[in-house]
Length: 156
Image (cartoon, rainbow, N blue to C red):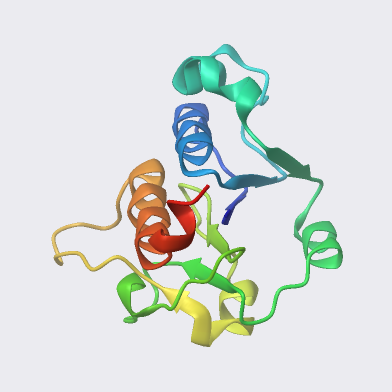
């Protein structure tokens, strides 16, 4: 079983490294969509992912257009954003789904969020907080997807 974690224009190497480690342990595929704010061969990414990076199933895309051309995205995707009221735990995740996360500074581009508005999800937070760290957000939502599909996941 696998899910697809999609990072749109990630900026911070330590977050991407930690998400890489998370994906290895969760059996998820990591998609990185350029532009990326760092070189994925940087020591910071490898250090954050430790010895996991070589075990990671990672795909790097030149831009969003290339990603959407090569991957069929319908109701098999969710888009994490602070710009919706729908909590992530209301989503009905299925094996193979794509879970999108935007850059640490800009989030997912507005045109993508608008196109898939009914598939936007958020992590509930108090009004005092603006957002959560990208790696933490990814872990919360990815493991909810695993929880919902655990009978499949546990057989892998």
